[in-house]
Image (cartoon, rainbow, N blue to C red; front, side):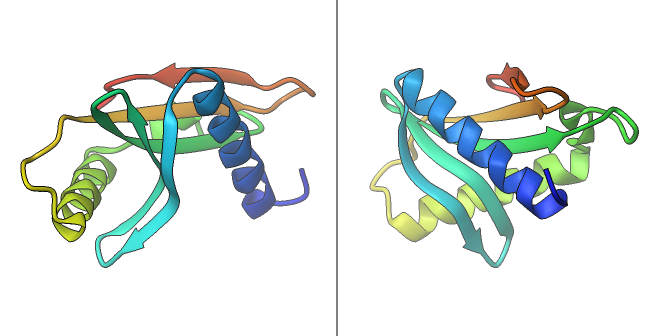
Length: 118
């Protein structure tokens, strides 16, 4: 991986393939709104899943799953609320917040998919 941005993009591509292989349907990627950005929004049956992807090449600054602070958690929830309101759902859908942490140390990355992380 050349730099942080390409590492992140590679991690998101890997996570998207993992989600599809696991039977989730991707609704949108890199959703941006005034509250921030959500890496992936998907459907798992009737559940709307908001997914934060964290990719690391070392544990120097901690692993990806360790980087979700309370402030980041609140921001992700605010983004999800904005999305639901913007899309005009007639009733509030079931929501889930997942974190996919990827450790890309060798050719084959190690994945920690934490469902309902928040």
